[in-house]
Figure 1: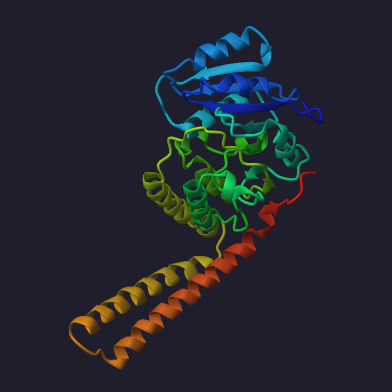
Figure 2: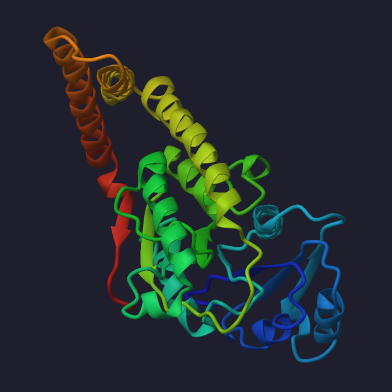
Length: 323
């Protein structure tokens, strides 16, 4: 408990027998509830947690079990529902693989406890030695997905969208349809889109990345296309709900015409290039037509992004310190 507010830590776990005991033992004393969500493990994860419940973990440790493998996002949502039902003021998430430093938990929850923000995310990508600590393919994949998430979610200054080290307030959990959240690796991206629609304030806290030989089952070749499609749908949904249904904003027109004109200009320009290579010179009028649509579309997209940044700039707070 901190500032008379109980703290719950949701730990999604799938086949984490090698790490789960240390994750539980290293949990700070101010944590009131350690909610282990077993996502249908086939190893000794459940047995280890059960044995710790009867020993040093005591009453703090709760285990929730899925009857089939649903994905890390679904496991987090299950923990969120437990925290919501038990009215826990602050709920955090720490992975069951030991890749999150428990010593940083106090910094993660501080903005929620203080009322500065409704949601906090860790940021690994600005760590001084991240290029040497994080596997290169994960760094590049995370950076690419973070760029797409900026556009889709409206949190334009966010750096690390994929980290699972987070904290959220009870009031915010009560405003989100937990059943509608994406159940797999795209969970944090989907959650950010939904947080923006309810105008939740988000803080990003620098954290230290930990990679001590843990193996990841994530394959970027399949994850990136899937999450990109998820973000595209989330982007369209966010614009519709936030800037058409709830309140009108001209950025919707700029985005719509920008995408239309940019697509026409790009496709027609590509056609002219192919025609020039295959059949010979193209008319000046055709080239000007393609250029006009391309440039107009690009300008409209830039205006739309600028409007979006301005409208959402108060919802994101970046902290470079660890006060």
